[in-house]
Amino acid sequence: MLQLQILRENKENVITALKKRNIDAGPMVSKVLELDEKRRAIQTQLDNTLAESNKLSKEIGMLFKSGKAQEANELKEKTAGLKEASKQLGDDLNATAAALQEQLYLIPNMPHTSVPAGSSEEDNEEVHREGDIPKLSEGALPHWELAKKYDIIDFELGVKITGAGFPVYKGKGARLQRALISYFLDKNTEAGYTEMQVPHLVNEASGYGTGQLPDKEGQMYHVQADDLYLIPTAEVPVTNLHRDDLLAESDFPIKYTGYTPCFRREAGSYGAHVRGLNRLHQFDKVEIVRLEHPDNSYKALDEMVEHVKNILRELKLPYRILLLCGGDLGFTSALTYDFEVFSTAQDRWLEISSVSNFETFQANRLKLRYKDETGKSQLAHTLNGSSLALPRVLAGILENYQTENGIQIPEVLVPYCGFEVID
RNA sequence: GGAGGAAUGGCAGAGUGGUCGAAUGCGGCAGUCUUGAAAACUGUUGAGGGUCACACCUCCGGGGGUUCGAAUCCCUCUUCCUCCGCCA
Image 1: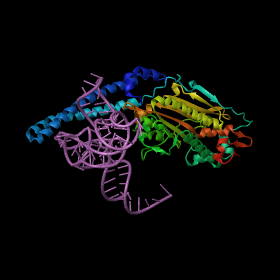
Image 2: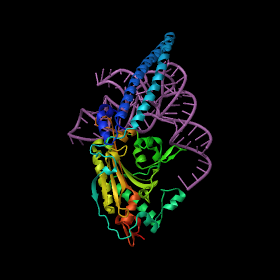
Image 3: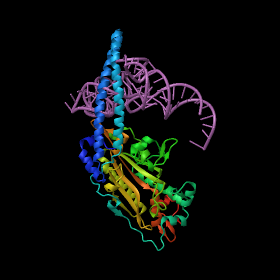
Image 4: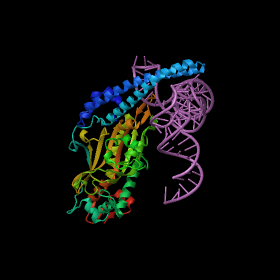
């Protein structure tokens, strides 16, 4: 959620910035400012009415105390009208504030100045590429074939017990999953991130805090009986740990990592692009989250990018980094780097990590603030990134590490797996 | 699931109808003392709205009500604690 103050003071800048997302925010922003003005006008009226009735109440109290009941009762009659008026104004104020809030929720974050213009993923800018693409022998298989060949992932079994998009990992496949989780968590912990285990269901307020609600509720599984949402990413519970917090400057940086399963409904797409592990309803992910002082957040973002690079280097997977263009940027993000691993057998890039700076957009919703050196409350910056998402890393490993004698396990994972090859 | 109790500022904790946005302690900040630090002492210190700045308004878990007036009384929801029951 953008800060009202910024909209008030820099309306044109906001509209210009949002053009990068290929939206004309003019009407939305105008509506917000209109409602804001209305809200403040009502607030002023209400305040004045309340001030007057507070004053009368005090006088009545004094009169009763000094035994002048008659005069007090006369004054009482005067308060009736004020009471009526303040009730009406209070209702108006609530309605206007709610409308304002609703409108404000519709405006996405302003892209950072370095975000390239563009309308789709075609326009994302490749900023880095690293790693050798292996030359696979004749008859190299995509991961869903390999999964079947070595009996390590069973998609049909998942369909039987739950539905499409809920794979069952078996034997060495399951062990490799567990190894990846441990390995990622260890790498993150070494880099100073505190490991957290958080609930996999969150309440509505948490969904609003990080921006999944109100506009993306269709993407989350909702447990209606208890009004809870299955998390689409650890970002939601982990960032919300500090909802409504007022931190000290010395608390920064706050760095967390957590492993959680992620649940996404993402209905609607079929075909090769969502085949196998490419798109799932439930998948595992290890996330890193940072809360930062605004002055340091872009440095922190760079650190996170370097961190993910290091992991991919260790895994010896060929990857590239994309700077997302305005049109492809997530609703809440100001700047996002996507990491993609090259899947040799599918001959395509698979997104395995997304590292973003949300600046104050989430913090404003979360009421996540810190006290600056002058003692004033300021909004913190929030960031997060996958480090890493499992299924496509797994797909990348299976496909890129396949040999005629089975699938080699990347060296760094061998201690975690306890075996060197899947055959 | 049954029976009781509780929810107040960063934390602890007082306050049961008017001058309470709220005692006190701890913590934080500033100062005195000190070569420096600690201790001690003095002062200061909740959040949000509003204003050029004041004024003023709101907030004592959430929502609603009673009253001229609510942290304080009533209703309701949520959460926590204690005891009992059940249970991985």
